[in-house]
Length: 527
Image (cartoon, rainbow, N blue to C red):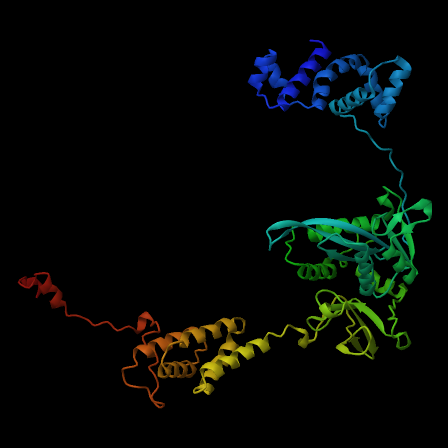
């Protein structure tokens, strides 16, 4: 069948299919075989061109097969357009360029001829001077969230000092913005206690808008940061990650040695685990190239870093410096985290600070109200916390205890308070649940039974709402019996307490009773 007639048949079938005809109806109307209709029914125009027309076109290229293979093997980077041009130039072919492109792709796949890039010659580079250069890059990992039971992406902005190979990273559970990049760099500077003279980046959209032939146009947020910090920026050329190989290796190190197979709960837990890993392994492990431990070399390199000063525009005369408040209500200072009272992040995104001898004083941004004060830690990677910065659940539990006493135990307040405080002391995690059970247990019960239950639990040091409930039930049932006086103690083991088997007494029957029951009383040998 000629190409034109096949194309007409294909178009006719597709047109009737579009009008809603079934395969059986098309075969009956146009007189085509069911086999031909099934062949063209779900075929797209591209598939028709490749499966039907291309065979005819490929047959004309088969005569050049060995020639094309020799070209592709000798010139591994030869493009399909060049092959098409050479065929036209040397053999005056009339085959379309798309057919040549598909045939070249077929030959490469069939004979495993790869489109190889030219090999690049490398040479070793000397390490920059101490405190001079830091390389920065972004890595992405996929981890399992054990809360949602799904996989999610985490983004890490990685940092490494080129001389000591000292590493750090800031993690995000969303794609970081240009502002996040600037904040991450500030956090890193604070962590390391200073900043280098040069930063090395990829041509990332967070950093630069356009390379502009060397006159780089930076993003607005990064340009403001670069000018304020007076930093030298080295931007790698496109498709040239080798020029920042140190941080490329660090990103791979973070992915494979820390993040891989690690379960994710929340960002706070993840950040704490990461900082512990850095102190334990990331900066403590001997580097395979330098054969030195980064943490030890960094102790010398940190003295070459430029001190950082973020001055508050409102109090420049008093040299009040500022710090960003993190979501977990902490601020970074000299490589350590210092806590703020709960809720500070919701009120203040930034705080100012002063140094008074060995104290770090944290104020609001205007420097008027003192928020927190800490003793400065001389170590690195520590969380310095004030006890009053923990979430205060104690006040709520204490308020609930007082409400129960006022509402239900005005007559027996002293003994009830002894029991409730004992419950709070011995079961602090479940104090709320215990107090609710106490209220439920005394509802509808008589005052004598409640008082007897309180006295019994306090006397036997049973600080449990469950024991109180069982005791009240027991004394409620025995309310008609002899009342319990102040001097008369309740039985040590009333029926609502399970007894051990060794304390149960069992009466013994005479063996003659069993003989009589079995009808053996007239057997003389049993007497």
